[in-house]
Length: 101
Length: 313
Image (cartoon, rainbow over all chains, first blue to last red; front, side, top):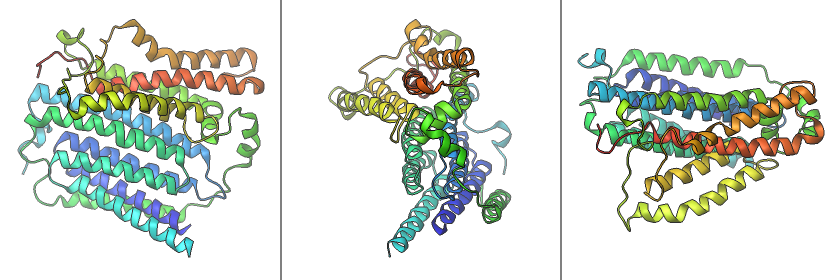
């Protein structure tokens, strides 16, 4: 149980770190990476919760695998959008943040 | 003694994970963030093994660290010229730190407030012998919660169509992705010849073994996608163009077989996606093989990106 709490709290901290990264980053690719960190932290939290019973519960594990695959699909779409934005605007940041202090 | 040792290992692993994650969000430079994210994915896979979730560990290592890493590295290579002078905000963004800290604290608090369930539910233990496969995660993915997996395979297709829509009009008939050139006799060209046969074997084994051991269509399909990507990056094979009929067939094979099996279940077994007990194992293996083909091709195409002409932007 103590070990599970370590992993759950790590997951919680990862969500916080990822959220911080999502807000603090300017470069859009870094935001995609930070968003992946949030998702991965949630999976870890969820996975630790799934292991609390007598034996690991396969239902959450199957959902996490589904989640990992969908996260990759979403990241691929996000990266393609970032590339399209760079092609159109010539920079990898959002226009309203370009010269913000 | 062993328990204390295990706890120490868990604590050290989590400390490493958090340190690497900190480097991902706070380190200078986009390249550094991407490389640390790949390291993070590998460490997370070890964490999944410690949580008794080997199926998830395989998926995390292959997808979280592997394919996502290739995707991000390739994108970084493309965007290098457009890299902003500053990739992080000026100074310390206190409001973002506060928001992230509050979110983490709320989740941490919720962990100790959650009731502890009796797991896994008795219904699952009772139903597992009738599922047709011994790996409980595969049983959940392809039998008990087949709806989720069917829709997921369609989500992958939707994402791929979204990526393709970002291609420029003139590039429509070009091969997928950027044109790749590997130095003859270089590391990549060597890898491109040595790795694919080994990867092919590992990928097919993961799918086949996934019925009763850790593995399955997603893990095996990802390894096969990686095999294709290595071969393309090394210049051994050329990716097809969007309209190639054989490849389009491979993309929809998995969802189509899955849907047909679901409809057959509705006619024969009294419910959409219900697998009759005697046919569960052959049905699951057939669906898994078809799904693996589609997952492998879809993931490889997603990572390659929209078609692009030589020398374009």
